[in-house]
Length: 215
Image (tube, rainbow, N blue to C red; front, top):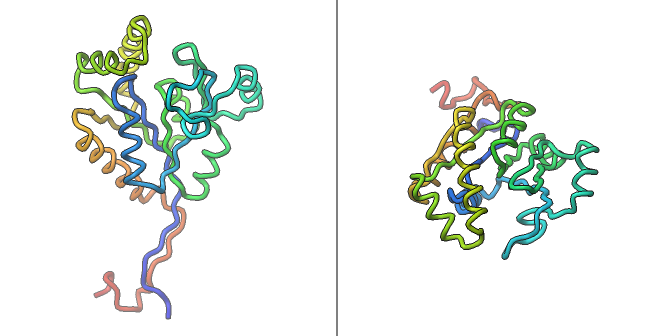
């Protein structure tokens, strides 16, 4: 007996999440991955040293500058950028394989990287995460205890520049409270997954049978 279920096959969605340092991006990414375990978190390559608690291959692929440069020449990065004197790059291969297979991918990248991804992958969805206030951003950076005063000053200067680019993004989320911000991110993911323009193949029920379409 032919099934009356509606089945669809869609392309994977690239979700870009950008935020100034201290906006709470890592916490929200972890929460979003629990809500949507099917989303693949892209693991970037970087030339900086691991921070306490970071695990190679899970948080980043930590490589020497020579290896990073070789990957650049071979076109292995969908985008790369120089951030706080370190290089970061999004691997192209895993990103495109997941899209073809209909798996959504989350990119944790900065404003420079987001712009480059949007130029190559026009259907990518960009989200900018904002702190509730400038004073709160300064407080969060100071409380992290992982940056020196000069580094905090540089990050605040970069944050001012990054926030000016918000008009190039598709969505913004203000991280006043974790639960509220997660609800907003969840809504964005669900809405983008349901876009008809993303469906590659439909299988509709027969209209000769009694279905919700012909009752």
